[in-house]
Image (cartoon, rainbow over all chains, first blue to last red; front, side, top):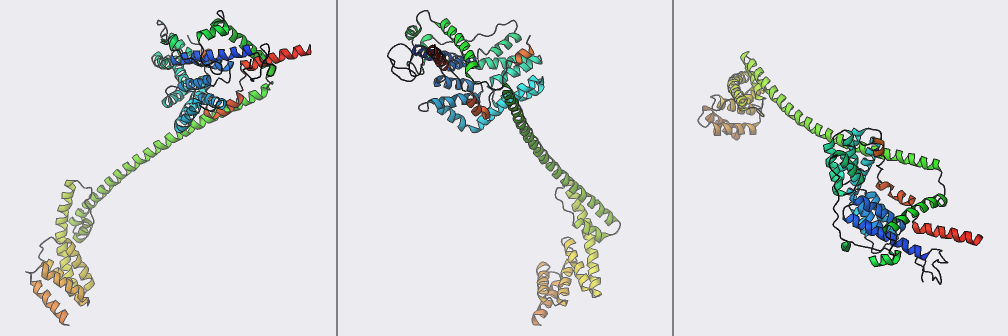
Length: 466
Length: 50
């Protein structure tokens, strides 16, 4: 017979003389681990995740190398939002068996969804922080954290339960009941949720999960022993009398042995060191949670500030436009007052600088009326002033006056041909003959029927002949 | 009614991604087979001493 542990040939008895194990006990231990895996699988398929988790953890306690149990346990953890626990199980599983192990794919999937993984991790941290708040009896702060966590991961069962508990503390049974139902939809035998259900619906019995999995449909797996565990094999291994009660007795005994052995085997860790590590870990977690919370709050505050700045800029632009319009309306009033006080040219220069952008139709009409009134009078005055400057040989002043007349004069004004002609004469006097010819040409073209057209032609001829 | 202290004690912090590595290192599970081997070795050691 070969030792199932070290493959040494055992000639007689059950004990291996190399590794020292009892082969019968060894095989039975592996079978129990496989049975517990099968039970875990059945429970997981039925949506009883809490009991599946317990069963799979026990399976691993019997055989730590049962990588199938670890893979399934990882899936169960993932389903209830414990992504880090899931990752842990899959990492150990892939380190046990690297080839054809679905754990490798699970890890890849998690790592490929990097952003989601970070978010799920944030949700876990928020839950952990909320738990601390609850211990400090700050249930309002806890509720904020839990709501944020559930926004990220609505399947985080512990957060759902804890939020439900917070609502129960606040005596809001309706909200608590909704959350309890959500938990039971994910994990139908969740003990915490069932307890809350009983508290909330005192007259009702807690909903019983419906398990529709028949014996024949049960997927069974045997990790390292036989390929599949049938009822016959089960009988062969444990006999007719050794059934589930035997398994349970064995588990209890084994657990007791585990406890005693741990006391003797494991080196005693200094309790002071453990306490220090735990305190530091707690502080680190707290700081990390605070950092996440701070960064989220900071980000929200920045977003709010940006939006506020945009709003203020928009308001500022509107107000500036309104102020500008009001300023121009005020200048219109000033121009009218200046005009009425007799300072007509001054009033014209004020009106000329007023734009009608942003004005209402009524304001545009008012401005047009003011322009017609002021410009016509101002142009007439400036024309006469221009002539006076010409007579006084003040050509520069005369030119400025005539140029302004051209800006203000209404269409068809009688003095327009002479004003233009006078500008040509001034240019000629200043020996700017090119400009003079251009102006005289403009007189001929724009005012062909005026007296000044013939004069302009004569002046052009004289300039050319000279 | 729900007992606050008792209820809160049912909730445990969840492992976060940053702690996975240290958790794997710390979690050196001794399974049933390790225990059986240990006990068998102890028994055979005592027998040889006697």
